Structures are given as C-alpha cells and as structure tokens.
Image 1 (cartoon, helix red, strand yellow):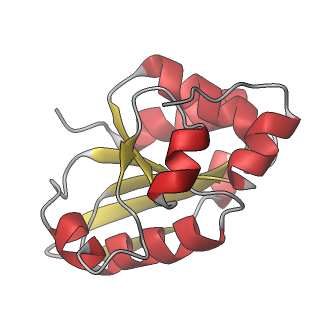
Image 2 (cartoon, one colour; image 1 turned 30 degrees about the horizontal axis):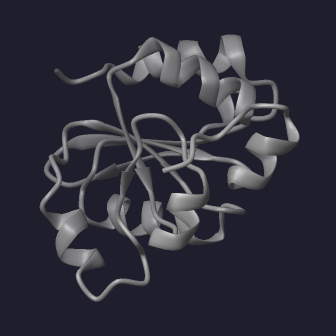
Length: 141
C-alpha cells in the first residue's frame, strides 16, 4: 500500500517541530512520481514509526546494528559492496525510514534512493545519537 505524501506531511507537522511539513523537500523524479523526502527529529520519527506502514532501514555496520537498533529495522550496510544492488531491489513505491549513527551515511543513502526513483523517504535527523539523547532506547541483537 502506498502512503499518500499528504498523510506523511500531516504526521510530520503534528509531531516534528524541527522540520515543518511546509519545508520538507519534494521534487519531481521518475516517470511523474513525486518524491517525498523529509528529515525528522526523534519525536517525529517515533510518531511515524508508531503509525506503521514504513520499512525501517539501518545503514550502519553489522557491529553497530548488533549494539542497538530501532525495533523492526533491516540492516543494509552502506559500506557493503552490495549496498547499491540491495537498495535497487527494494520497492520504490514503499515508504522508507532510514537512519545511521549521526545522519551522515543515511543522508548518502537517501540521496541515492531519491536518485533511483524512490517515492517516500524519511531520515532520522541526528541518527541514533539524537535518538538516544532524547531518552529513546535501541534494542540489542
């Protein structure tokens, strides 16, 4: 099921003070599909994740992932040789939530995803550092 960008913008507007929906970047990409790309702070991220319907991608290393990750996250290590092919294999019409440690690697990953024609992407502003600093836990394993 494809999430409407308007619903996503409403969630951000209600839950995220650092990135108002009116300022979230959007650009035309692909064959007429509008991309929705937004940085969200931990509070906004928590609301988006609680609403469901997003695929969570952790682009850190397997060691970092094992130390702690968001519940339901799938590891796709950006430093792995198969990273691009792993991203290319994903459903471009699904909604993704991407994060790393500080938002550097996730920024690279979301830029690639947008270039490849993905329609709806959220990125955790400040990564797991900000998530933990906000008092939210990661799960180990």
